[in-house]
Image (cartoon, rainbow, N blue to C red):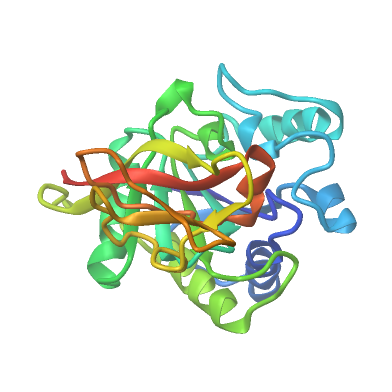
Length: 266
C-alpha cells in the first residue's frame, strides 16, 4: 500500500503539521510505503484556516476553488492523485470530540482502517458523512480510499503535546496496518452525520448542558441554546440525535452551532 499523509490542510491546525514533520524527521520503516505532505503552507504562515477558500472543500465534482487554494489544490492533485492508494488527512477541532475518524467514502479499505483503530482504542469514534465518494469535497478524495483523523479539543494555532503524541500514534498504526487481512466490519458502531443546527437569530449560546459533551444523546425537550436572560430553546424533533463539532470555532463563520448524527452499526 502507498499512503499519503497530509498535515496542515487547515493552516491554524498545527498539530497535524507537527506530526507530519516528526514523521519526516524520524524516517521510520513501516509495513506500508508512505510520503508526507503539508496541505496549506501559506495558511500556516498566516495562522489562518485558509487564505482564499477552504482547501478541504476544494476537491471532487462539487469542490470550490479560489485564489491561493486553487493553485495549491492543483499542486496536491499533481503530487497525490494516481500515485497513492490511501490518504490520511490530519485535523484538530476545538470541540470535545476526542479521537475520531471521519469517513467520506465507501471504499472497503477506508472502513477497514477505521474499524481497526476502533478495535485498538475503544473510545475511538467513527463518523460517516452525508456526502460520500465523488459527492465529497474533502482532500483525502485524492486517493481511492482514506480517512480524516480529527482530534481535540485544542485551540487553533496551539501545539498540544498530548494530542501530537496521540495523533502520531494513530497514524503509525495505519502506516503499519496490514490492509490485506480479513477484518470484521459488521456490528461496529458509527455515527452517521445527518444535519447541522445553526444558532437562532439574536444572542443565543450553546447550552451548558451540551457544551463539551460531543456524542451525548439529545432527546426531545432537552435544552440546546441559552440566552443572557436564562431562557432556553429545546430540541423539538421527535427523533433524538448525537451532536458533534459542538461550538466548533471553524463553523462559527457559517453560524453553525453543531452537527447532528444518528448512532448506527455496520
